[in-house]
Image 1: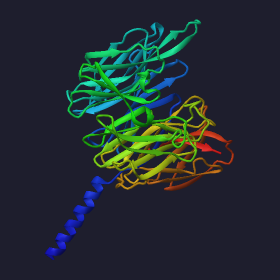
Image 2 (image 1 turned 180 degrees about the horizontal axis):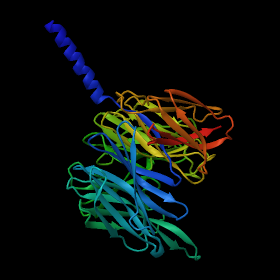
Image 3 (image 1 turned 90 degrees about the vertical axis):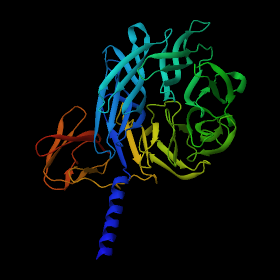
Image 4 (image 1 turned 90 degrees about the horizontal axis):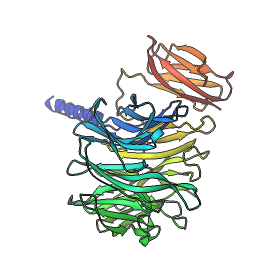
Length: 496
């Protein structure tokens, strides 16, 4: 009897352990009538995800800072939209979670003066603003791209590039991009900065990382010097952001980089390369030493489609789980509102860059990957945009995809009984919608894009069917309400 009790107790512990550490997976489209972009992600201590970017209204031509918080199962989310001055445009580029606080970096654009400022926010764990600052930058420049780290001195170190309008010899105007470096303390006060002015209109800096002995920074730049031709470059800076030297990236890989230490002396980066075979428009992944020597190299590609590294964070590591990523079938001519079908491309790799597995997600619309994060449960979360040109006009949706450590999107965690889940299918569909729920007595409303309710039906069982034969082909919005008419969930349904 005593042995049987011990065995049952051990099985209980094993079962409880699996519930606690089970991997969540989900796929979520977050829609709005405005154009939405998410640039970066972080994970808090509870396994929730906070995503930042911007949301733009085409009528006012202004954008607002956009924050999404998604719980670890993907079953609920909340939005926070910030626009301190309604005549200015705002965008968040980066987010960090440190000492139970969120630190957000972005920009404020004052349109009628053509002036831009660095925008710093500190938020508590519930996303309430604790402090906010704006800091100026020289000349008529604006921030176009930004990545940042919190270094060993607990300072925020930023790099990226600004943009300005220049005039050529014929009197025409063109955009000129200039790299910058900026250091703040955790209170948002400026420590030092370096803003370049280059005649090269593609003077880019994409990422920065601190070296292992915490004495220098490595910035990953492109077109910084003509010495290395089209190759990417690693710029070495001291702690005051003064340039010390510059090295070439091996194999002429350039742009986006996403540097991540995967061993004591090896930095993983991803990037582009030229059009020549055998790696024309492939995703290039390599590890280099701190002395810029090549350790390992691999390329990844789907058929003849063009690959493009994720726009902000394309590599991520948590413990032994290493992920790299790209957009497959990226449209270089129309990169944001393409008529292409494309995919999120995710590869889990070994330290020598051989793949453990490789998957593509999407293919039914234009998907564009912005950032990934290796999550604390061993999986990976991807975020970017989904654009369906047949139903959308210059208005993108946020697409969030969480996979487990095997790259699968399946429910593996215990589902709490007080959570009501819905399955509406097929989507896209034709003459019928099937709805399954975990609870009875709910209501569904189906709207057209003019806001008219076309179908309103009480769901009296856990399995329901709606006849949609009379509806024309197009995009519709659905909303679920509980029996007390409390709003629960919304989404899109497409009739072919």
